[in-house]
Length: 107
Image (cartoon, rainbow, N blue to C red; front, side, top):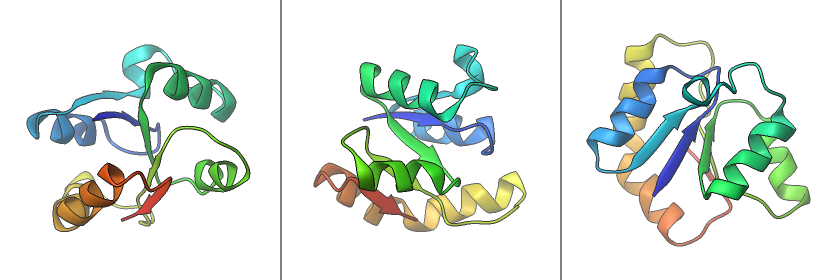
């Protein structure tokens, strides 16, 4: 699987996905750190990425149209270690739902 981590999440999350054997980029890796959601959406769609976000705009957009899968971390402002721990606790179930083709996976 390929993951594109949105700006409001730490680059360490992209590293976490890579350590699990997945291709992963943080938007800042591609010069998209300050890009609009529409630009990030098109990039993710064209490159086959799952968008990892904590922003509700991407899941909302996905409910209205086809597009990339969304891994929506339902976490407020949190330290990197908290974000990584949250993902660790939800990883197996989130991965199963993504593999099953769920358009939006909440974690």
